[in-house]
Image (cartoon, rainbow, N blue to C red):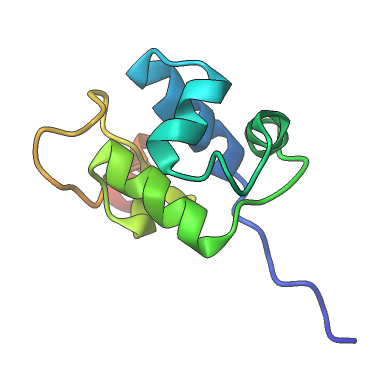
Length: 104
């Protein structure tokens, strides 16, 4: 077997941020993602606590709910917009700490 692929360190935090910004329960996000017939609601908790990683198709649905590009979810150097869902589709914003280092 090969090496496990690297996991985004901030993915769980971003998935939780999306659900909380939408003001919905873990059960409701299953409905919004359109996966209630494929995964159990406790899987959402696993995603949000970084115990498990969603499939690519589930991540795509999260990105669509938040109106962000998938890159904004998986790139640890990007922050999600403050307002979710974003008014216009966005790629997220560079983390301030990274911008400050680049400007030095």
